[in-house]
Amino acid sequence: MAKSGAEPNHSTAVALVLLAGAGFSVVAAVVKAVSVDLHPFQLVFLRTFFGLLWVTPFLFRRESGFTLASGRVGMHVLRTLAGILAMGSAFYAYSALPLALVISLGFSTPLWMVGLAWLFLEERPGWLAILATLAGFGGVLIMGQTRWEGFSAGWIAALASPFFEALVLVLLKRMTTTEPILTIIATYGILSALFWLPVAVWVWHPMGGQDLLLMIVVAGVASLSQAATINAYARAPATLVTPLYYVRLLFIVIIGYFFFREVPSWTTCLGAVIIIGSNLFIIHHKG
Image (cartoon, rainbow, N blue to C red):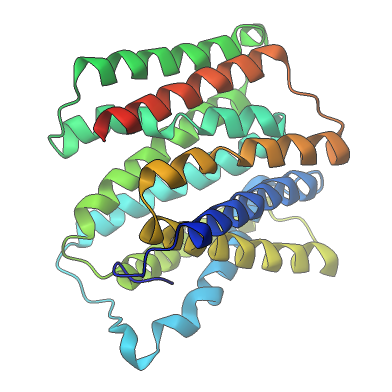
């Protein structure tokens, strides 16, 4: 994982963010495929548990400075709760809705952050940012206008996940001022695994070795994709990296078509364009 002082390298940053986009798209597709036979909450537990195992070797390196001691226990619990709701909602949405629709709705996370940063970080947005945010949520309404009659738990999950993800990011911005990154990662992994364990036992369905291996790989790919994203932002300006973040929609459309025979509706495409455009405008407006 690159440190904050990583040497600037734009070409490396571009490659990393594209690899991360492909990785996250593969994770979503595998979760959707496996959820045909297994409950999404069982998969969330496996993703959380194996994800913790993947990062454990990095926690105990001599130079890591890792410790579970913290004076901000309440913040860790709140961050964990938000993360639990974000991942649980996303996995459920993957199992219930077309992948391109879920990913497109997930792009609303930066829009939620505008309001949450105002409430929790006292970052008051300008009127142009507010208008762009409202336009972005207009894109959400467009995506849903042909589906409201069939409004379901999957839709609720797809709309809730980006909100809780935005809350996670806002909390992380506050926590990283005093808490080591590895402490935040490990505390979340331990607490979330403990939460999802009884839930997974409740909905548990016997699984074969192939599905188990897929979830181990998914946890590793997700962890590497997160690390690649952090490295990309450490090596290049956000104005270069963020637009490439949305390439994952192209990856997910290709995967959805060839593996699940999903073709995005015109409302999904138009709504995604509006949401992405609103996000890019807000980023440009912030400089």
